Structure formats: structure tokens, C-alpha cells
Length: 583
Image (tube, rainbow, N blue to C red; front, side, top):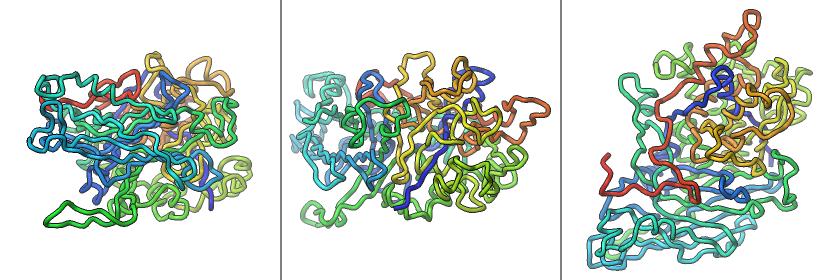
């Protein structure tokens, strides 16, 4: 099996330069909701629809990794009497790859749910301490590549919908606080993992209306609005000991904070039986093989990269199918969004993106606009020897052919993760040469499949109350590494705050939309020394040019979640209450 390789120090670099001159903490922006109704077929099956995926080192328990997979987009909190809940006849799965030498997943967690009507004589969802559509779950775990599964939680509790005070706290209802119902749903598996399954606030924040109105973000004629504010989702959360997730043979203590043996890939999916038989006299019957109907790894892939004609196909295949199934690579080599950031294409048609422009003459030589050659002109140049662009290092993955300009940054960002290999290091120490060695910054390289969240578990978590904590993730870490003493005074490896942020995994607070939009606009290229077109070293040695500042200051106006996250597992805010929410 051919192994895809290499990276792009992507988001890390993106914001670095703005901080260079302002030293400020950028709040983020958003765009498209991550996997909310992202493909035609799954939009008709919301109970099986992945909305978001997160993987991060637990800030209050750094010996563990927290993985959260959310499903069921756009839950209206007052959507009764049949409130939203996990579906029966669905396998909800969280997949972990920890060894690039072995094809496929090493660890899989599988949730299945059972629904019970405790009082079928009433139309109310909750009455007299009884629940209808009451959900419980079975959690199974496989550690042998999915060949066998062992049950590690039986009859797991799922909190009810947060209907209202009479149904929850009232004597005619459950007669207890919703907070107690929520916290008591956290359970411990027989194998040591902490587990939560239930309704929560939707942790993603984005101006859905504007971004899908042909990219009108930030809105040109009105203020922004978080399109997911006061909506709920259903979330599966696992807090897993790092020792459980390590590849076989890995040392229990990492060699350093970029230890390659500590890299995992995470993706989530849902599957249904192939056959559903309807009857006029009885409930539907499900049979046949299980078929994957939804998947999610990196945020925004299916929404903002894959065209509508391929979205259902993308949902059906796995990340490992992407190694041989290369028909969709072109959408990363020449992304559609880049057309609206190019004045020679359709840039003028999307005024909200006017600040986002791509290098067409970086260093006076390199054009990264769609259809251009990017760095392909360097193919075979002795200057590439020993770098990630050398055919002898990663084959032809990063410079596959002419006319594929983003093969060096966007494609690897979504397919392999970031290696600690030249040129994917911070510019600190490069002395102006993007092909020189720089400051080691991230290593979450796992070339065993395609679209997954990749996380290096050896990187320490940044405390959420740290003054350096930033929702810009690796962007802010890159900015510190490039501009803030003592980090920018040495090319040595050292921990920089926010090195644990997206795209090194994904924290709940990370503003993935702004990071990815900036990446499409070439900020990753700039971060490794391929500056924007208006950089002229003869007039100023500073690469902090107006084009760069425009990209880094771009915002859609929605920059934080509508509800605060909590300080302990599962970290998510409780679901909005139906009697208190008006959309």
C-alpha cells in the first residue's frame, strides 16, 4: 500500500505574523458548520449525521486524551413531543489509528443505542418519573483492528432532553436538577475509559446563513449571527488513558514533545444496515450488512472542499480508501474556495473575501493560484535534497505534476499530517531561505490514510486559564515561536503555548474555520518563508506586509461559542432548555 506523506505546518504558521507586529491574541472567525448537513443523502438521515469531531489532551488530566464526536445537526431544544435522541439500528463509531505500518484502525469504540417507552399511555416525553424514548447504550471496544469487540459498558445512561422545569425539576417530572442528570451520565468503562453520551450544546460556532450565501462572510450589509447558537447536538465523549492509545512497542514516556510514536489519527463514522423493510402492519425491519453512511475527520472537508456531486461518495469511503482512491485529490490541489480569492478568477464576485488573496509571485517566482505550478518548477533541483520535497524522501506525493499548486500545503494537511521535516518548520533560524532547517514546531505525521484528525499525544496541554491560551491554536503558537523572546531566539525544539491546538488535534475552543480559510489563502506558505507578493526585501526586510495582514485580520464576525465550555470531562456545555430558548 502506497504511503502518503508530508505535511504542511499549516495553521500553525498562519497567524504568526500578525502577532509579529501587534503581539495580540486574535479571536477567530467562522464559516461553514463542520459536517452539519454536509451531503445530500445524509441530510435526510440526521440521526446518523456526524456534525463535529474533537481530539485533545485533557487539560485537567494530561495523562488522558479526550475524543468527542457529535451527531444530529440543528436540534431545536423545544422539538417535542418526540425529542431528538440517538438512533437505534445505527453503529456510532470512533476510530483510532496509531501505527502507520499496519493498514487500518488499531482501536475502535462502537456505541449502539436502545430506546424504551416507560409510559406509552401519555404523549409527554417525561411524566411522573418515567421517560419515553429513554435511551441507553452499549459500548464495545476492539483493539485488534475490528476483528473482535468486547463490551465495556452495558446499559449506559443517557440524560433526557432538557425539556423544562416541570419535566425535570418538578415533582410531576423527574424531581432532580438537570445538572445532576448530566453529571451522573458520566460513567467509567470496565477498561478504564470515562464515557459520556447525551445531548449537549452544539460546540461549533459559525455564521451559517452568510457563508452559504455565496461566501458573504463577513456579511456586507448586516451584522454577523452565529447560526448554531442555542441549538443542541448529541455527543459521544471518551476520556482515554494515553497508555491505551499508544502503538505497540512505544515507550510509556515520550522521547520528546514531538515523539513520532505518540501520533494518533482519529475519525468518526456512523453505519446502518443495508436493508430497511417497511410494513403497513408493523415496525420497519432492518437487515443486511452494515454500510457506512457518514464519516468525519478534519473539519470542513466535505463541506468546503468536496463538490456536491462527490459528497455522498466521500461519506461512504474510509480514510484508508483515499490512499488508492485519488479522484478527489484534485479538489485539494486546486480548491474551489481559492477561485474566490483570486482577482484573475472570481475574486471580485465575493467581496467578503477581499482580504483573502493567494501568492501568485512569491519570492518573485512561485505562483500558487489554481492551475499554476506552485513549487513544481523546482522538481529535481539539488536544493531539494533531503527535504520533504525530495522524491527520495516522500516520493512524488508533494510535487506530483504541474498544475497542482496546493500539493505542498493543502493536500498534505488533510491527508498525512505534519512531519518535522524541512521545509515544514517555523522560519525561525532559516535566515530567509524557506528550504533551510527551521525551528521544530509540530509532528503529527501519520501517512496511513487520508482524512483524519491527527494528534501528537506527547505535546503538553496549554491550560485554559493560561494568558497565552488562544483559540487560534497552532497559529498563535507559530506567532510566539517567530516573534516572542525567548522562543524566537533559538531554533531548538521547545514547548510553545498552543502547540496542542488545531491542526494538532482539535480543541473545543479552536477556531478551525478561520484557520482553514487562511490556509486556503496561502498563509501556511508564507509561514515557511514563501511570502506574499507585496514583500520586497529591497525596500523593507519585514515580511509583515499588507497582504499578510489582510489575511490574518480577516474575520466573519462570529468568534466564540454561545455557551462557555466547562473545566472537567466532558467539557461540553449542557443542552439548551426548551422552555427558555427562542431562535
